[in-house]
Image (cartoon, rainbow, N blue to C red):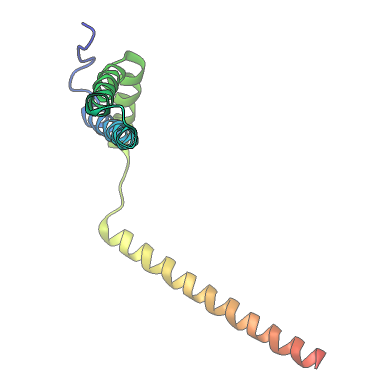
Length: 127
């Protein structure tokens, strides 16, 4: 019962995504450990088996954590809340992006003209 799936089918995608993400991080860490151990002369067995063993241990830890009751309940609730979100349409996002780009360009021009005007004014004033 140590590695049984808690609330099977609920929060599936959140748990899978989190598990794969943590797995990638663990794998990259073990790869870095392997590269570090290659620089030493401990032998091929140590250079390969220590990172591989650590990766297996970390993978089992990740599976255990993804099925721990408190963590799994949080992920089930998070996935449920994400289903309630009202996502914007593609057209709304395009229009909003255009407005933001236009406003940024307008403010950049306004600040540029103001800066240039002040520079001319103070150059004339200090003559």
